Each structure stands twice: as structure tokens, then as C-alpha cells.
Length: 410
Image: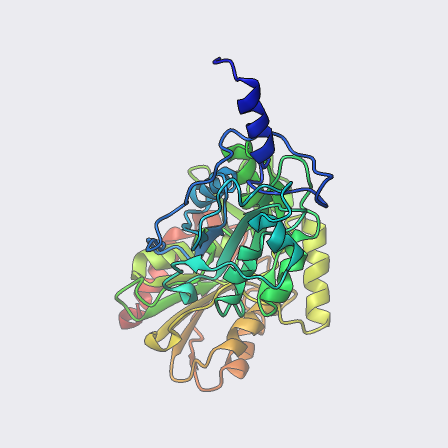
């Protein structure tokens, strides 16, 4: 390794900003900093850059002064098949700007005046197209840099799910996420996570996967298909691991080539493949627990309280669909309460609703009548498809036969 001179070493220590890419001390003069491999920041993206979308409904937006947060953001985007957007300051931060020892430096001045809003170069072209935003930043004095507040105040984030994440070499996540909530108060905020500059793809992926916010769990786009049929479904597999399942986990899932699908999810995919329909998974904004007993208890409480669990994302253009295949498991002879949320959220007047259902012995129970009550101006097909959880794995031919029997509706 090339020998570093004393002068170069002192300069490196002066400008080093730890794995967060910026000041991370709780207060100036008492930092816990380690040198970074790239102490002088460079712009993350050109001013005109905006996300190149590929149908993803997840955006990873991040500010990174020295590259560490950018690395974690890249891991997230790869894991989630998400778009990325670099929050790029109009005036890039230099090493002098990031010198926390200098009271006149830009970062220290911003820290001492929280009303400052550093200007951002460029913007997200279609923020409305995203349901979930992962928001990344380095910790500066235990908090997010003020440019992150600029970003949050630049868009209407009502109803969107925001998941914060930060990078730091020593400080924990702390209250940095909660401190941002006031700048997007109408968003649905999730607990965040802290990483270091050396966090691996596997470490980031493990956290991201635990959130249940993968790109295939989000809204369909009005441009995702050419037909007028939508398959909307709620499904609750109780595990994501195909091996060593408990009996409850086996009864809630179908395993296809090592991939775990929920029972109703499997039926939905067969219908989608046969009809060429668009697909929308009715996914709770706050994920349900996968532990069987905990899930049963929560679902029971929701039913007793007539809860309306919030849904992650939404169908952009429900008006374009004439036929909606609606899938769900039967829970205590009723619809899961999140189905009430879905049916009360949209006006399905004049549309044909085709129910399909998985169950543990109760069939449709009274759910068809409930759907008709919730959507009195829709045509609720009584000849829906219902299958026991014990028979789902072998039900493909029965599903196809049922669809063929619907004739032109298919």
C-alpha cells in the first residue's frame, strides 16, 4: 500500500465524514468519525436525470454525499426491482462544505439553522406513479441532512408508504426517521433501518424482504395491459420458506418450482394467465404477521372491531375495467376486513364482479351476499370459483374448466 504522508493523513482526517457521507456526531466537537475511502463528494447524477421507469411502483430516493448511501440504495433497487432517484443538490457539497470542525462551513450552518432548505437539481417526473418510497440519507449529527426535508416538501406524498434508511459508521438509526414525518404528514411511514458503507447486498435484501413491499405487491398501471379485465386478490401465505413447513404453513401455501404462493394468489395467477388480465394484489399497508396464532388473533380482532386495514397502493384507473375477478380466503365465514376496505374504496357500478375463493371448509359462506351489499350497482356473479385449501395445489384444471364455462366473460 502506498505510504501516506503526515500532511495527507491530517487532511484526510479533517475531511473524513464516516460511512454516512457527512457529519454524524450528536453535537459538533464530540463526533465519532472514521475515515472514508472517498472523502470528497462528487455529484451523484446530472441535473437532468430522472428515474427510467420499468413498470415498478417502488422508488428508492436517496441523498449521498460520498457514495455510501448510494451503494445501499443500489442494493435496495436491485432487490426490489425499483427505480432510483438521486437527490442531487443544486450546489454540490465540497469537502470544505462538509468540514464539521469549521463553524462557517455549509454543513455546520445548515445544522445550526433547520429552516434552511438546500435546493435540489432536477426532480422525479412522475411521483404519482409510485406507491412506495424508500428514502435514504447519511446521518449528520444524528439526523437526516436538510436537503431530505427539501425533497419531502417538494411533492404531494399523501397516502404513499415511505420507508427511511440511513448510513452511518457508528450512530444508530435513532429518531432520524420520526423527525422527518412532519414534512410528509399524510404519508404512511414505516420503521427504518441503519446500514454502514460496508453493508452487503444480502444484508440489505434481508431487511427489504422482511417488509413485504416487493414490486409485485404494488398497484397495476393503466398501461399494464390491453384488456378490460382485472384480477384483484388478497392472499396470506404464512411463510416464505419452502422447506420444513408447519401444517398451518402448508395449508396456506402452494409451492411451484420452489416458489411460495398463497392459496388465493395461486388461483389468481392461473386466472390471470388464462385471461390475460391485469393483476392487483390487495396488500395491507402494514403487513400482517406470518405467525399463524398471531395472524389468527389479529384477524379476529379486526373482524370484531369492523376494522378497515389500509391498502398498499391502488388501482390507477378502475374505470377501464368491465370485469373484475375478486379473490380472497374465507375468514370466519366472512370476507377478510381488508376486502371491505377495497370494496368501499372503489365505485364498481355497472361492472361484473366474479368472485373466487379459498377456504378451510366453509366455501363462500355469505360472502357473495356481502359483496353485493357493498357494491349494489355491480353485477356479482353467483357462479364463482371456490376451492378447499387442501385441494388448491391440484386445482389448475378445475380453474381452467370453470373459466371456459364463463364463455365470453373470460
